[in-house]
Image (cartoon, rainbow, N blue to C red; front, side, top):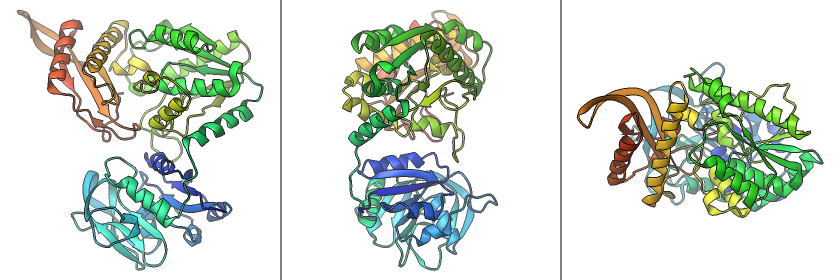
Length: 511
């Protein structure tokens, strides 16, 4: 049997699925399994080519640190430990790991010490992305050091006779310039995998899985008009056709003109069975005087469940609730071993009494992979490359309590921002851009009088998948024009600021 599959053991890193995505992009099918998976489980799969140990938020020196089944080291397949995975290997095989005096987060320089197939195509000095609080104090006896950082600490090692590697940095993120090359070296050269997996295969497999799962039951899907729910709707429609009913909930937090555009696009152009539910008053009432962002998201999530339940009862019998959930939604909501970053309206919190079973055909994909699926399904480019928009909408772009006036300010400012970005042909250069109304007021001068009004923030980032992001370098003249228009046209704004924080340490959304 050909070696066609890589298994990632998940120790809770926010980047675990990103590792899988990078390897899938090389044409190799990748499974993610819990960190406590036993070697015998892996040995039963004859197509196993290699194992990756992910990073994670724990310290390997902690009493409750996640272990590794030692028998996995005896499977005879290549192993690559990343960050926590490297430290796990070092500790388990006789080395020493200690807490760093100064934690290392962000860009760093790697200095190669030895030649190795893992680093084919790398220069002697390369930029890498670090995210760790512990470091390797001494490598195991049967290992040799492949690379170090500027402080002389080991950041890459290998076993002298076994195909076992450890690296302290993250090759899966874009900030490690040659990270993709390293993963390709591991998968294709060291593991000798055959590139037999593709997104076309994913679509065909998913269509078959949807049909097998749903059978002759009816499916209710929440369609927002965003990339995720749109692709999910078209994919499910292609699988089961008339068994799908789409419900578009207007919660009152959409961008300017979006409600009408959604109904026209999917109701008239694509002729999907779509029903509009106007629930903006219910959502606004539910969020009155709520200023905690997690509470906002959870309230919106619960109300979405209520709205869909009511829609199902009024429209007929539905067995499944379909959602455009992505993997980034799941890991940021802290499922499995991952830490909670923020709750998503379509992840978790579903009551056990809910009469629906969930259908989430995109939950193993990242945003750019969903765009690829949409393109392969024939969706127009304007829809496929529509910028991300959170399920809770503008409600989480109003910091503090939500009311109709403040939502209207964000909606108007967002429309101005989108208009200027389009006018300057920056739409494809910026992954996501929006405005945030802060609860801060500052003194200003407009005309001949003193003002004391709100501060508005602009957030614009470049990214591929949303797991990491950098602030967009919008030209100063464009920023100047934006500030002028926003202050002049949006009543209640007298100051505009630009967010220049990357992800991490910040998230893309402010709430």
